Length: 284
Image 1 (cartoon, rainbow, N blue to C red):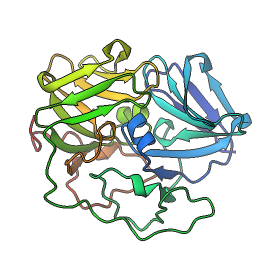
Image 2: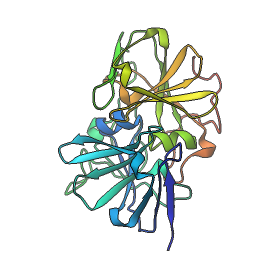
Image 3: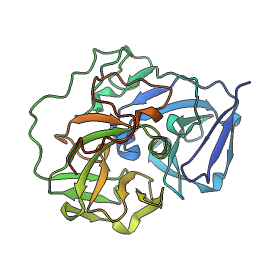
Image 4: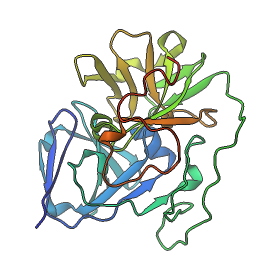
């Protein structure tokens, strides 16, 4: 039996399972992107075959009439999705230890993908759920020359925290580092803005986790949505693109820390890849 292990970023919640895990799917729905700040890439196992340590640190948010999402209340790591009263537990691929031995199988809910997403692999794509459905034609590339809105708005999944950004925002960098994947559940797509250009309501619900001596990560204490990654003391902050209302007018420009990427997916969009930081290849 092969044992698969995983944990949240701070280590308060760990899991182990010997179950045969399902091939992961990449979910492009707005709820997953808003909650995780990344695509919702999940595997699945019978709940009875998953052993959790630190389950008291898992906070569940009811995101639908029959579904709920679990995150670590200490660090904000996105870990689980389940049907209320169901027997299976969906587990984010990013929280699992490598090697997982799994391979991404398909894209679902592509009708709701971000206007910055590029889908050019050969995997099946489904307009919404793949249950009793046929694949659709591959989604088109984001249009060139889309006008950027003068003000971008966004909010966490539960709506407790709202952002309004009136200044310029940086185009998107996808980070594949182990910390980001563990915290978001998959590689996140980050834009960036100056703090001076951000108005925030509901800031009393904002929670911070210091993920290193130099950086911290901000999330909603009610629903767990990823909101910020900040180099402490800087005048700008990284913001997941999935948090923003469409159209964002942003473009995906490159991939960073690809030397640390997960084993369950490939990067096929042809954009520049950096083994570590991208340096000064994008502004601020």
